[in-house]
Image: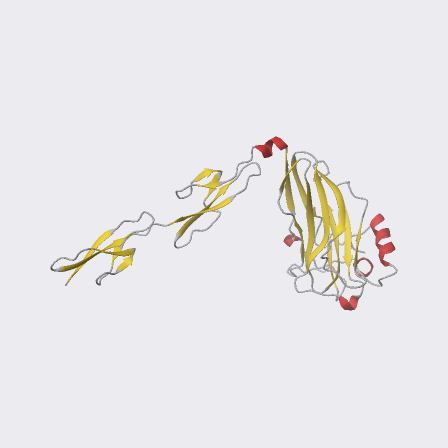
Length: 289
């Protein structure tokens, strides 16, 4: 039997015994499917990763089964209860298991630093490739500090988070691909001192925040960098046009680079300028008549 135990097993069967005859909790074998490249993984997604003490926020648990049809998903989620309070858990309004007979069983006895749930297909004939939402968790930020919110997952284990392949009821999750969260809770005085990044007018310079030149690659025409905020202040992307030096063409009134600017010809020569851009030099050009 996959991930569920204790109260969750009881809850699962209370919710599903009258509706389903097969699902991840009653069809799984005791040996996990040893496939490391299935592309099947779980994710935890939040709007941001830094909050003030007393602030509430939601985290959505999602699944991506790669190219595999699946019967269901078990989730075991851990968090630091000294930093965060888990206030509620519900099935997502856009849950991927959304056919008649499908459901999610959630362990309501949370608050001790972990949560378990199972979302499943009520009909094995309707198993499908899935990518999307499972359940939504609402947290409260209790005190300053950092807390991981993560799926408990170990290769070869069927007592933690699992994605159940419909062909054989084996676990195909690739734990190394799971996307977890690191949440930072700031005391209110820290947030009041937030520093938002602000770009300077020179390459890799910030008026506020810390410059990071490696965060964005330069392009042919632009220098790019980030100004990193502090104390939960926002980061900003910065760009600066590269200098274009004026360079004369070989024919009358042409430039290899820069912009043509006409000037008065002499009796023996055609004359013009190639005007540089963004601080680039301007050069005088001429050819014989």
